[in-house]
Image (cartoon, rainbow, N blue to C red; front, side, top):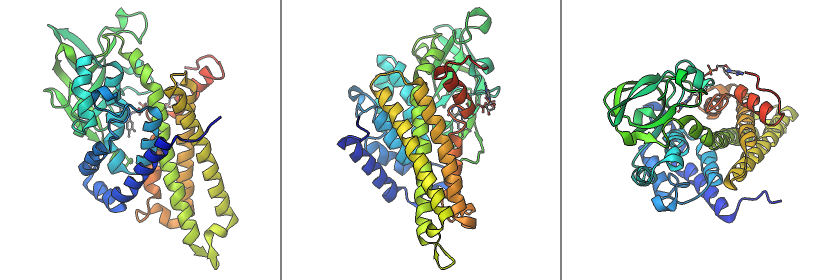
Amino acid sequence: MDFDLTDEQRQLRDSVRAFMRQECTRDVVQRALAEGRHSERLWRRMAEMGWLGVAIDERYGGAGGNIVDMAIIVEALAPGEPAIGPYFATVCFGGKSVGFFGSEAQKRFYLPRITAGECVFSLSITEPGGGTDVLGAMQTHAERDGDGWVLNGAKMFTSAAQRADYIVVVARTTRRTDVRKAAEGVTLFIVPRTAPGVTVRKIETIVPIEDTNAVFYDNVRLPADAVLGEEGRGFYQLLATLNNERILGGAAALGCGVAAYDAALAYARERTAFGKIIGQMQAIQHYLADMTTELDAARLLVYRAAWLQSEGRECGAEATMAKMYAADVAVRACDRAIQIHGGMGLTEEVDVARYWRLARLWQIGPITNEQCRNIIAQMRCELPRSY
Ligand SMILES: Cc1cc2nc3c(=O)[nH]c(=O)nc-3n(C[C@H](O)[C@H](O)[C@H](O)COP(=O)(O)OP(=O)(O)OC[C@H]3O[C@@H](n4cnc5c(N)ncnc54)[C@H](O)[C@@H]3O)c2cc1C
C-alpha cells in the first residue's frame, strides 16, 4: 500500500502552493474582493503554468494528466478566490464535459482554447425549482428549428457565467410525457454567452466573488453542432461526470480547511494570554489536534476517490463520501479557526471568516450533503432509496 504522491505530483503540489504564496497574496485577494471580480492576470499565469489544460488530452494541447493532478491543483487554489474563480466552472465542470462528450470538431475547437486561457466555461444545471431534484424541476427545454434548435428556460446559480464565453446548458428535448424515464430526453448544449436571448443576472451570495448567476434563455437559436454528446442522453452523460465533480469539490473544501488550520496554528503560536501563548492552552491544542486529524482523514478520502477514478475503477460511493466529509470537516475547521482567533476571527483583518464562507459552499454544491448521505446509504449501506 502506498499513500505517497509521486515525485511529479509532489512537484506539482509544491509549485501551485508557491504560486499561491507569491502571486495570490493577501493584497491580490483584497483587490479582487474590492473589485468583485477574479484576477485576469492570475488566469493568464495559470494558463502559462499549464494548469488550465492539466487533464486535457495532449492531442488538444493539454498536459494529459488525471483527476489526481486536478485535485492537487484545486486543493491548493481553493482558498484564493482570484485564482479558483472560473477554474472550477471551466476546467472541472463545463470545459471538462467537452473532453468527455465532445465531437472531434468540438474538442479541436474548444480544448486548446481552454488550455491557453482563451475561453471560460460555465455549467447551467440548477433551475429555480430546485437543484437536488434536477429532473423534477427541469423546465428548460429546446425545440427543433430546421437543422438547429430554439432554447427557452431559466437557470439558477450558473457560476462564472458573467465572464463565460460558453455555457453548457442542460435542457429537455423530449417532453417528459413522451419518455419512459425522467432521465431520458435531456440534451446538453454549448451556448455562447453572447448569443441573442441569453441574459445573465448576478446573484449576490456570501461566498466571496463566486460570481454565480441567474441565466435566462429566451428563444436562443442554436445550430445543430451546439449539441454536446448524444441528443436525449444528456442526463446520463452528466451522471458520468458526477464522480469528478464530487472529488474536486472535496479537494476544494479540503484546501479551505487546511488554510484555516494553518492560519489558526500560526495565531496560536503568537497570541498570548495569561503570560503564555494560547497554543499552550489545552483547549486550543485540542481544537488544533481535532482539526488536523479530521483534515488528514478528509485528505485520505479525497485522494482515495481520485486514485480510484484515475484507475478507471468504480468510485461512486467513495467520491460522494469524500465531498461530503471534506466539506463538513472544512466548515468545522474554519469555525474552530475563527474561535481560536477570538474576536479577530470575525474581522476582515484575518482570512478565517473568508475561508469559512468559501468552505460553506461545498456543503451545498455541486450536491448537498443531505443528498450525499442519501446516496451513500443507498450505495454503501444498500438501503432503499429514501426519496
Ligand atoms: C455559490 C453557488 C454556486 C453554484 N454553482 C452552480 C453552477 O455553476 N451550476 C449549477 O448548475 N448549479 C450551481 N449551484 C447550485 C447548487 O448545485 C444547488 O444549490 C444545489 O444542488 C442544491 O439545490 P437547491 O439550492 O435548489 O436546493 P434544494 O434542492 O431546493 O434543497 C433544499 C434543501 O432540501 C434538502 N433536500 C432536497 N432533497 C432532499 C432529499 N431527498 N433528502 C434530504 N434532503 C433533501 C437539500 O439537501 C437542501 O438542504 C451553485 C450554488 C451556489 C450556492
